[in-house]
Length: 276
Image 1 (cartoon, rainbow, N blue to C red):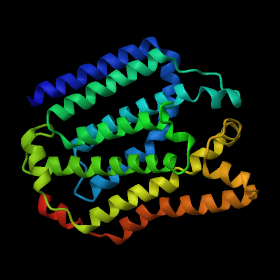
Image 2 (cartoon, one colour):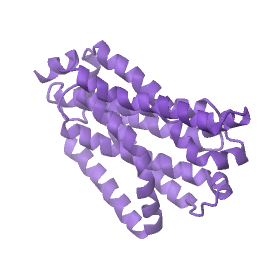
Image 3 (cartoon, rainbow, N blue to C red):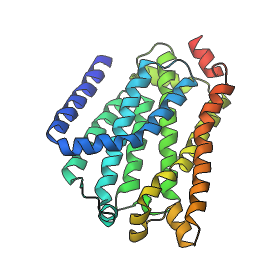
């Protein structure tokens, strides 16, 4: 069963790569936009490092997470046409491109969920929330603070992907994608270090996400999107004051993981129980 699931995921990946070969303009655009996924992939590695040495599982699941964020970025760019037009951006993501990316995400999530992998369910949450963020029926991106809370949910899921990937890898030697492996993960105890870190991942990504809205402030003001910057500007705040507050908050959130690595000189209790 394990080999069948790996083969299915490889087939999906090959199909996507071949399709992108014929969509060269969209592929180049997507590669540039994938930088937005880097903080979430990094959070996956942070979560994994609290459990034990980084494993192959982490690399595989981090790749899956990056794919899901590529889908989210495609959805966002398609439904941001009004904002992009307001600031003179010309590249338009078509409906067929969004459909192809959504189908790819559906296959990846389906394969992992059928296999009983908890990471599969976490990736499904990332995908479902992306609809709430971008699509017109809800369009959470337009409203504060729902736009930032969704970024926090994505950060929390990314962190948990790293933790669960390690628990699946070290928890009894079961394959990553198996019902037995998922059942064992649910029985494993988690110490407070990981629980607190998960909460910080949610809160930290909520704050860090504020910074990315600065580049879109002109378009957001024209179409009425609610962000920290547009709300502050409408209330008459000075631009320099907004930048100082944002830089300080984001800098503190980015420094915290590095300080924790200096402070924590040994694995968490969960990691010791699994690795040792």
